[in-house]
Structure formats: structure tokens, C-alpha cells
Length: 163
Image (cartoon, rainbow, N blue to C red):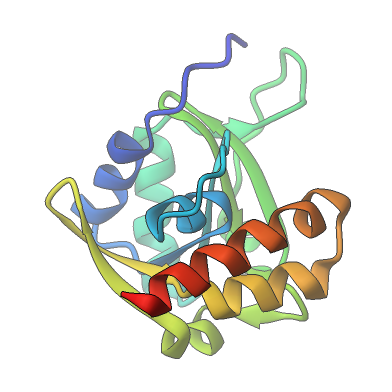
């Protein structure tokens, strides 16, 4: 499967149009807060309620989403996958998408909502994880790539607090 160039606004627009409840986390959240980082996929923590999962399945069908790294097999997530706390690493017609049931030390959608900001991007009102919690989550996870970006996120947070 040819990997499309990421088009995050197009990807997000489909979620918004379908009324999916989600929070932008990861690299795109950092970029939206002004961090000078590069990211190649969109990470979303989604609400795992039955109604939201139904809307999410419609979105994934429209996006022709299937699991990455499966060769020629086109495996698609089902309701039980999306209801789990796990990570669904997908490829869509607008680029890579990671749907996350939880992040860090088991932080789900409801846990994270109070730590979000609403940002308007390309005319869309989006929920984005705040920088403080994004830093905390990256510290909890502790992957090398996460540890490498923490100083950049901390510096971005310092700059934002001066404004």
C-alpha cells in the first residue's frame, strides 16, 4: 500500500463532520501549541462510548482505514478494537492515524478532557491536550523519541506562559 502524504486538516475534518468525540494528542498537539517539531501521524484519544464508536466506524469506512504493517492484507478495526484501551495504528487515504483508547498510565478520553484546550484550526473547533499534560504523558511513557522531544515541549510551554 502506497503511503499517502499526511493531510491532517482533511483527516480531522472527516472526524468533525461525523461528530466524533476525540482529543488530539502527540506530535500534532505539540505543533498546534507552537512546538517546532515534526510528526508523521495523527494521534487521537477517542471516547469509547458505544455511540461514539459507531460514529468512529463510519469515519474509518469513509477514510478507507486499515491497519498498518499488514502487507497486502487489508485488516480493519471493529467495534471491540475501538472499545479497548489499546492503540489502533491505521493508514487512511489522508495518511497515518493512531487511534488510542488510552495513553500514558491508562489515561482515557474522560480523564484527559479537563486537560484540553479548544483551538480553532482551519475553521474547526478542536480539543487538543494541553502542553503540561502532554509533557507528563511523554515522561510516563519514557520512549526515547518521547524523551527527546520533552525539552522542546518545555521550552514551548515557557514561551507560551510569557505571552
